[in-house]
Length: 411
Image (tube, rainbow, N blue to C red):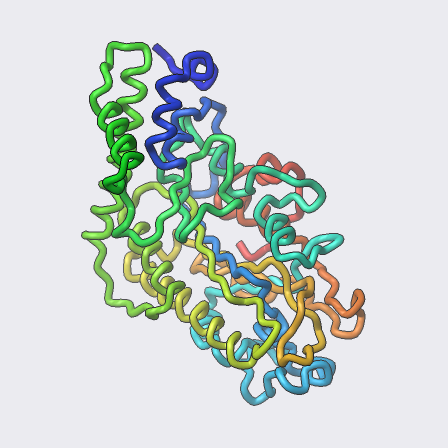
């Protein structure tokens, strides 16, 4: 008997119990509707992987990719500006923060593309709303599905795989929200599993899991529920096997971001068919004491991505993986009285990988032609998404994003 979402909605008592017992990412699989898979570009390999790094808090782009030759930069930032002699020069006008030696190495190895002046029309300076816009790729409407979730929905073949997308962190990210695709959130590989506490609620959940495993395959939904249970434990087993089998000579930092990138490397080494990994890195809301705090964060970001790419090279997967890094907005041009910067607009995005055409893309924003003290964007972030979807993942970006955006040439 073919089980679809429609028949389950008619006779859903059993799967409601499943939803109460198993993690939300797995219970979504029970309700997943069969749908037409996305048509891929035939000239793009189907084993490519995207790693999305979200810098939460609004990273100050001006002190990250620094226009060191522009005197307006130094005039507006007499206390927090980086001296020319300290900047890691990329060109005769643009350079990286001195803490970003790992990124500079990637640049020198032609594995780093920087998209300048990225933003969107009518920018929002609220952390929550602006991040939501980036996560959903919907600046004008309040969307309920994330752009990556839509992509994972589009590529599903029948019921979605439990490991097509993986989120590293403590809570689910809205960018991965979807109608059907199941995306687990993993906080430490050693903690990924289905062990519940010895409480009445935990005992009830374990009981339903046992029912999943022992469901009568002859009943209308028995085979379906049994398969759901098998997929749950199969996913857990795959993650555990990956953790045990991973070996690397690459050293990662002991910070949470470095550890998270190593966990992604561990999962990639297992070849589980995961297409997208997502990781958030917080702390970039530097209203005060930015000179001390931001370089620490940028060093962790830079070193973590550099170590990850070295790990990929050691596995022979450097040509299969792309890292895309963004923040919800940049900061204002002029420093504030607290030795920091306030919420702004346009900033840059980093694209990393051996398959990337290294270089600067887009136009660096003017520091004099401002919008109420803020930088004007020149590249819509959805053009970057569209480029990644079309040229790297081989997907139809118009179907995922709802409209066509011009591709850039970093792929």
